[in-house]
Length: 163
Image 1: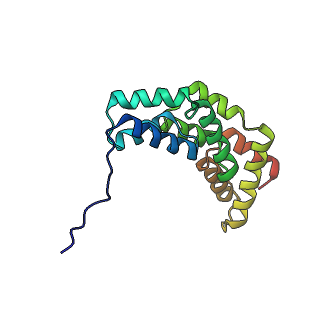
Image 2: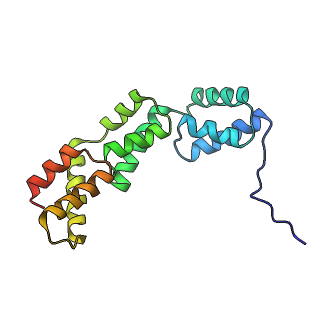
Image 3: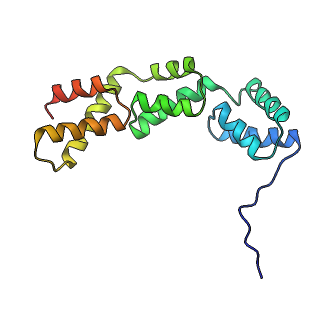
């Protein structure tokens, strides 16, 4: 008879092993401090070791909150077409400081942002079967809002493009 256990969790108790594993984890892609902290606790390390490893990772350049915030903002905008509101919420969930969130959002060029919203709305407009123009407009607004775009900007784009 085979016992079915949950996923194997290899607990790490040695700080040096934890640091090495955390370096690999951070080298794979930029991470927030909170992501790394959560992962270290998941691996079974104690608070003192976790905070020590975090400071070593920062000192060695493996962990950089500002670099992470900028990469996250650019990635979500370029790859998923997210608006600034949704990006900001995502960064807040990762416990990135507000000052770094502001810096990260400034890396998104206004022209690119506007073009992305226009393309998003044009694409969505083609898939809406609603005939009533007010309901169509409302559906487009809600869609863009759900993607994290600002309400005033959505209305301006809709008015200008006559969608």
